[in-house]
Length: 362
Image 1 (cartoon, rainbow, N blue to C red):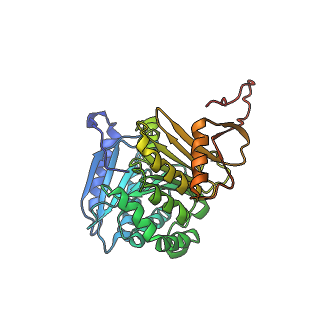
Image 2 (cartoon, one colour; image 1 turned 60 degrees about the vertical axis):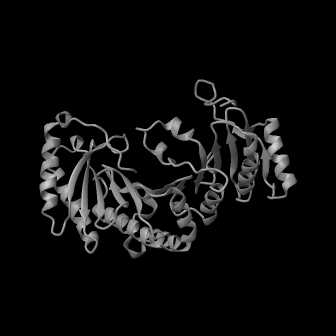
């Protein structure tokens, strides 16, 4: 999502790739009104390509120039073996400092690329802030794709969540229009999957998450710092376990009601301190007010958890879990209907060899 670059020896590129990059740059610069065209080495399995092609389009003709960029890259790549020419490119609109529209491949039909470009622009206008949208495509499928929406490069994290809460109605209108194929945005509809990867939030589905999900993140941010790197686990170049263990609060949400641990609040702390107890209690109370969210605070010394009932499996329960639940009940800050202390460990299906896919202690 950010502009991280890795060292790359250009001599390590196959000759056909070097030729493709040179020809692409020449052709892109010939598009009328196009701005700067540059290349930078990138890393990460998500991108596949070792090089990011960066193109600046004008504000006035951004849509038309983006179409020309996609069509140019597809046309040039036709002259090279497709298996050897993975392509990743970024569109920047002149005048924007933080916004990025990034595409990880050329497999998606140009109509869908421009529809998502329009969606990105509409979201920025509704939010009143610059965003990054990353489009992940399949080189062999011109209708299926996923997209990740995150803050603009270098954006202030707390402001990102606050702006979403303030401008939620405008964002919801844009999301509703794109879902129905209106205003020329994201017309692929059911063949897309969307992730909002903001500080303190990883939310996945086919549409904008509900207002109370963003409000929950905003509330949690008053008790704990929000995890700045919620999106890191989406790129395997980074240390996925370390990303999950990062200090701070993270809300996970999915529109799949049946997803295992799909909706939860996870707060990680490097150490437990007694003076942190009021913040833990406040965060748990905020979580309990939103239907269907499990809660977990974890530190090396202590853990406090509650889960959404009923549990089809084994309930792991500790005295600390019961302590948290009793404190919530005494505070009267939230309804505890449908909640229970402890962590629910589902009964995993048996593997063909007779063993379970995961033990109760996992």
